[in-house]
Image 1 (cartoon, rainbow, N blue to C red):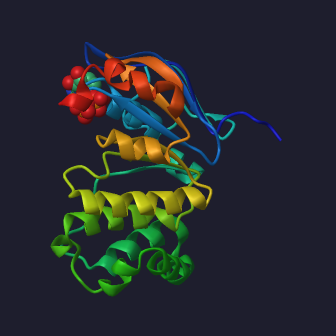
Image 2: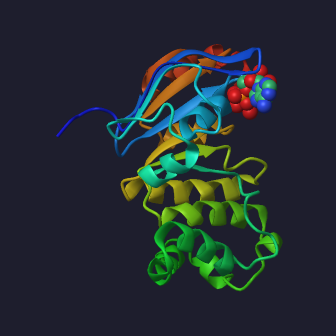
Length: 240
Ligand code: ATP
């Protein structure tokens, strides 16, 4: 068996029109582990997420996933390969019930026969969603909507989830719930690439951390190795 990382970016650059957002970014996520990506506002974290999930093209460099060069693969193919980005919940259909939202995702990814098993697994992992299965998703609390966004991909047993600001705007106690859920996802063997404004939470879960500054990686290593230098590297973001 190869010990190549599950996800590997080598020398990746990306741009929005004439504006270059990423410069020569190299980082990797080993199978079964969590990498936390931190940096100041505008440092390029979400752009890394988009480049990994295929929403923004890399203008240079290569992205390898599970042994395959996916640099030019469209987003939907990456999803089929087991690489999905979890959005902060806005993609949930507000007028549909929790169960209808889950069923739509599961049917699309697993086919009709896969739906009952995936629903059962989801409600076991997220009992709160089970209690609210008939409620329309638009009336869920902010935290419950994030749970739903996560639940939609959990039962698909993806190899890698790219989690971009999943706890944005949530009360601390709800952020805890989201992180408990992410810990569960990790314990099932799914790897995580986490972008999080609550840096301390992300670092508690992560095995490694990469710090971005102005589109470049300025640190890539262990959590312990960066803790004392984090605010300096992130340029005061933690004090904001
Ligand atoms: P934040 O923590 O504020 O979300 P970030 O680290 O995720 O920031 P990105 O969203 O990746 O940063 O943005 C990196 C740079 O690219 C920023 O300067 C941003 O203004 C720019 N940018 C992002 N999206 C676009 C876009 N669609 N068009 C033009 N520029 C963009």
